[in-house]
Amino acid sequence: MSMKLYCVRHGHAEQFTDQRERPLSAEGIEEINKEAAYLKRRGVHVVHIKHSKKLRARQSAAILASAVADEHALEECPLLGEDHSIAPLIDLIQEWHDDTMLVGHMPFMSRLVSALVLGDDSHDMVRFPPGTIVCLEQFENRWILNWVLRPDLVPDQGD
Image 1 (cartoon, rainbow, N blue to C red):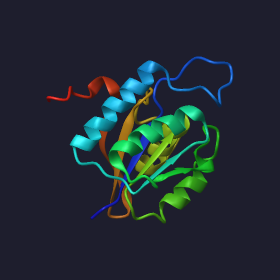
Image 2: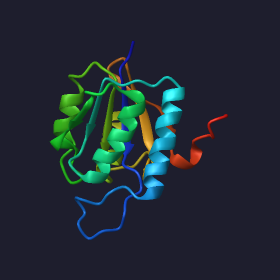
Image 3: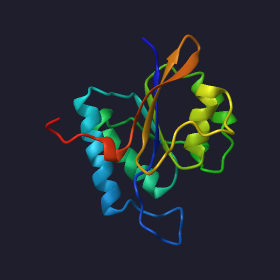
Image 4: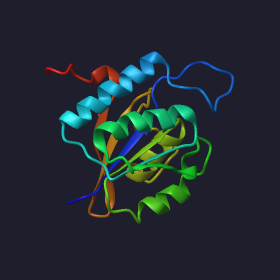
């Protein structure tokens, strides 16, 4: 079975001057909860959820973990900083075998997805509004785009 990598941009956050400690807004919490419930209904399960040190990413990761992972899956990952080079994280990802979720920021998440799928991080291949989840799948030593989920595309619970 091939590994899946879920690349997530944190949900909508409050507008504070301290960029590091901006919490999720009520809208962001609602969106991430809705996505988490949808992923759970669809049978998504990850072994690891790695997030940046920023509050909004930690909160998003915790909400998602409650639905799609075991309680010990959450882990801060210093390589997920929005201005960090993507190369060290790509090297690390190549060593992983378990389905993993990464929760971070723009432009890092967009650059990461483009680098993994296209081999070039200079061209965005996916728009990443807040709360977007991109599922990549490892296929014959390369990454393919499996699906993209944005909060506005999540069907209601009955769907």
